[in-house]
Length: 395
Image (cartoon, rainbow, N blue to C red):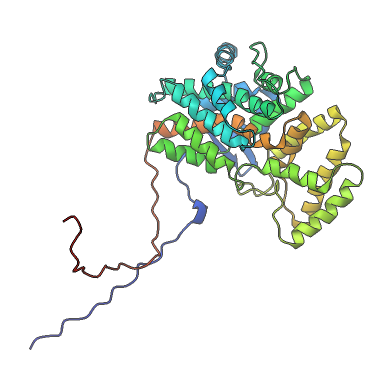
């Protein structure tokens, strides 16, 4: 007697655990930086960033990120000579910048300029360590010229050529404002560059590593990272902080206005930019150092009104939500006091973070695997077109 053939019904695929935004996913290992949960300190190659900011220059920190160790005296001298020799923009880069309307987003200008630098570099296809170190140094040296010139041209001012007798930060400020700044300003700016230099697998750094994993070139990786940083959920928070300060209003009565502004925003469940961080659970370890730099600038420029608003808003957020400031909260007002346009704040972030991006690019290449995650399909099940009886045209 024949047994009936059992009927089977296709079972839907089990839904895997999905980590939206890759939250909690460890995608790879890195020796560039980490946040130590025991000390809550951000470490660059093992060194707490606050110690580096107190004792080292941005040039020394860049060398550390790229080479794994701090330079000795001779290595630092050679590094500085090489960087200063690369500061001037090629005429073709300047011409492209001049063709971009001043109404364009400064990040678009910066992204385009990086692409032009890469297109001009005959060594772009060479991904050897030596070639990539040279490319990294070239971007490190020339981004200040791009950022400073773009701000100046928006005010109808001419490009200021770099000086090779000034350190990185002093020269950056000189090219932006046309005169050598006082030491308090230079030191505060240098601290901000060190604080922004690197932060593990953030969105822009991960973008750079994904691009690098395809064996694309370093300039392409940095261009993609600039595009990722342009997004307001990643970069731009330091700009947003100054927009908040402007909205509340500086001057007499700022503290009272901050209280009312905060109550209104929190009651409408609006995000207050410059507060909270996805990585830090006990406050951003970079904030105390940058806050101290801001206080120095407030004293230097005699702007107690700005610090009054800063402290009132931070205290109000803590009392109402327990959420602490992140690095963008003190850096935005600091850049404002220095004289940078608010729209220039995120390009300043790029000028610093290019050191971390390129360190990760080189680390990715050293043990490369194509980054290609899976996805779970939740669309329409398989379906088919009805057989056609019409002749195929051209058949």
